[in-house]
Image (cartoon, rainbow over all chains, first blue to last red; front, side, top):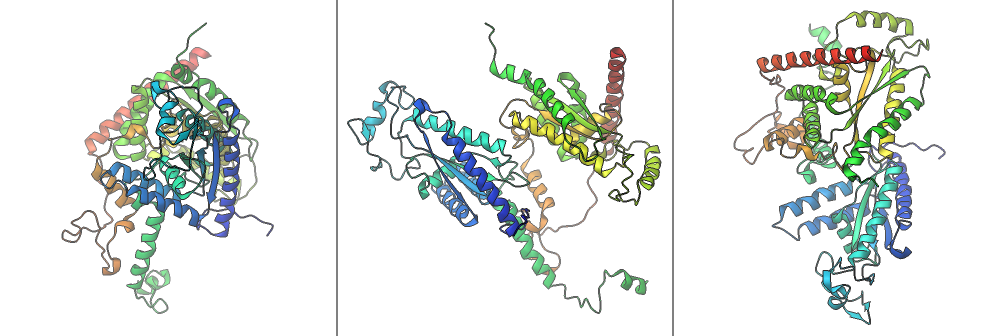
Length: 259
Length: 288
């Protein structure tokens, strides 16, 4: 197949998959930018994990919707998660960036995590022995994020996210960092070494899926609206039982005869 | 050593990015190689008439309404963007003699004959999308202007400057007298230096009431909010009462802004056009 035809519609068609492939290449470049981002002491602060394809993205979106339901009384929270789940389904790939060193404190007593207690704020609260945290022993397995952790090193991961987004900018793909996507990804096992993860959905479409969002976006997104049109179009067609061979009311010739 | 406030310095630097964008627009590749691209840059109070006209047209035009609110909010915060106007000159008569047919005429000569008739007509300010813009233009030359605009926008993007190419800003500026003799125009707002200005517009927070937003969606994609269509006259699920208090979709005449208000608005627009054109002429004379 020597020619590569690229067009985003219909979704998941060969011409759309060809486009998605390019976005995955961009995701890899973004991951590389995240890895080479500046970091404290030259120690790697971030790990990257890429997932792509409609089925995989749908899994992440479903997890986000599950997290939305964890706070049934908090509408702002629920709606944000559901809106962003719709954005994930409209993306081409997700780059997860995890704070690899969140349970390995920077040991300078900066106080970002707990103030005057220095690094002991984290060590004392987590299962630490001789200044080493046992990451296999979760403190709050049912929390959204199992803190506390080394805020200095998580902040260092922020640099990696910045580099990834700068790369997206340079490659002309749309990308936006989300807490909701990151939390869902972390729960699903992406970035396995990191207790806190940022999710960066990436898209290479005519319209960025991440901006200019309608209210009730989980209901009124393009996929849903197209789906309602499909359904209602078919029903409307079925109740117009016109015998087009013998009577086509819009055929200009038919009108001439009548006139 | 001098001290600088980062935000202030950043916003002051928008003009230097505008300069880079202008360089890019003028360097952009062309299909024809003969299109004259014109670039003008507006700053500070020169934006005032533009913002006011957007507000007047915004009374019954959602795009202009939103652009007015956004630029007005920038002004209120003391960080107006730098507006880069890009237009193309002499696009009507291509001078190419390609006889390609893209414009709808078999030959450039036929196009030019039609052009001569069209250009005799007075500018039409009634359609916001063609606010006094003269047509028709050579399709290939229009592509050239598109490429120039894109190079400018891409340059802003690569310098991490919040920007948006706005047709509203382009055509209104043109009506105000900028980009004289240009036939295709656009305005690219550069800055202010903030994460989101023109997308997910924070300036539009609480600027629309809920009813209007819901109504807008129902007008834009009615099928999505439709009940069972097999009845031939499907109900609109406009609220929880849609079954008991039925409402239907109809093709209706538009509810216009009150005529009096509209006329007053257009009179003010004309006044602003006259004033700005006089100012531009004065500026040109002093530079000559």
